[in-house]
Image (cartoon, rainbow, N blue to C red; front, side):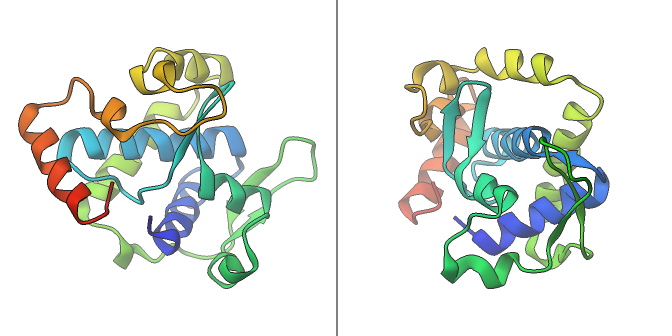
Length: 171
């Protein structure tokens, strides 16, 4: 996975949706990754998605949002996001502009798709939708979701492209 790109994706999300909460930020990353891998054969950042009770959660992305990244990753997270509130359910805003040089045009397209898909939708509606995804359904609770399952039902040509990326360790 590309940790720097994951941080930039979270900054981008928080810039587009100031006050975004952990749940929505995590699901936006998931929907962007799912859309991109299913359309173009590669994920945006390649995080590992865990099948949590309320849907998929990006492992590293969630650590960034919680402020619990490993010491070695602290420099790439520093100055990226700020808490937008002091409540029990944290909300975030971008502390700076995202570095868009990390992203392809299709990365931005899928991030924008996911932001639009999740914006103004309730926790329950988004959680219910992700529970219908094969990848979440097949994974054990609190266990990693399979990229093969995320790709299930995608165009066979895209699946072949994803296998090529996987050969280079992208999936």
